[in-house]
Length: 224
Image 1 (tube, rainbow, N blue to C red):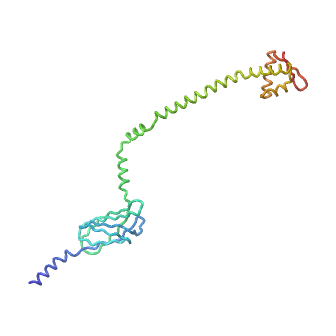
Image 2 (image 1 turned 90 degrees about the horizontal axis):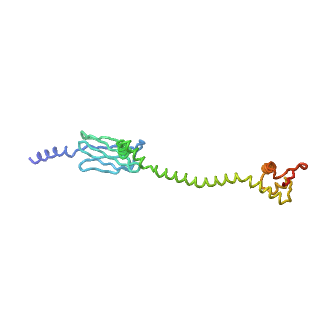
Image 3 (image 1 turned 135 degrees about the vertical axis):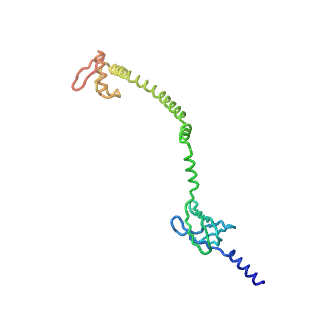
């Protein structure tokens, strides 16, 4: 009786002890074998292993499982999440491929798509400091006018009285030289061009204040 009971118990426990072997190789996005990979499968309890050579292997009973692989050495957190269904015992090869985890980027794109374009434009218009820029521009323009206008009036006054001042200066020089002077010597007393001196001399001659006498190649200016 006891051997029969022992045999029945053995036959009953054999199915419970059997399990499938789930194994495979982990590849990067460049199809290279990865290393130093954290592999996890959601059995009860959860199984985890660190694969240093890119290979993994788990003993699992029949059922559906999710394998999660993490590879933190990339700039982006490289992950792979795969679902596998083990329907019978034996050895199964299931390779895994690491892909960038773009969950945060997708969430950001979704948030941007949900934004109202009109509200974004209005917000940008309100934030841009147009009133301050216009005020600064007006202040700069007013300051420039305040600096330039007096200079322009001063320059116009100088241009209007310049020839009269020069004519008076010419008469003073001729008088100081005893009432007569050559036009060549007159130019030595004036910081002006020959053309301008000739113009002033011609004007004084036309007004009858001086007389121009021709002597050789030059002129003698005589005060009247």
